[in-house]
Image (cartoon, rainbow, N blue to C red):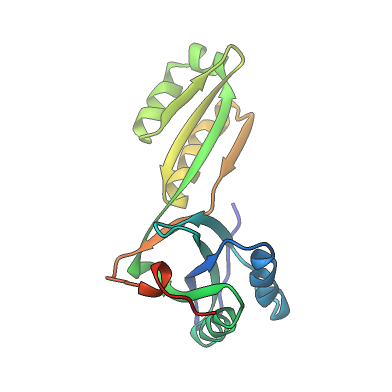
Length: 181
């Protein structure tokens, strides 16, 4: 598990960027971060409730001054409708993780079934050679399940970046009806 060290005035920010589904936007978005040598900790792109509008959830650790500058730069991009940033106390976020373990572990060690229950995970599929488990939650929760299953053998592991939604009442009427460009 990597440990992120932050400077005194740095915080973890989640940037929500709304755009039209056009080729090249992801490249232009990541280029903004690359130019200032700021690493993106996680990135997730998905459809929104508005037809043709996609939401990018981008997690970075930086200063408020720099996240404000980045947000302004991103909003100037063609086909970007809106960009807003927030800290964790103003959003609800989750991620999904999947674990592939040998099925023999499930059959030979009753404790693995209890571990899955204790972590509120679920079995997605059982095959003769492997079992796939799914866990939704915060990063520390998906990591805790990984740590608990690791002694029994993990064949494969994948974790999404967090997706988030604002706790605040946010209405972006231009997402549905209007157009910036």
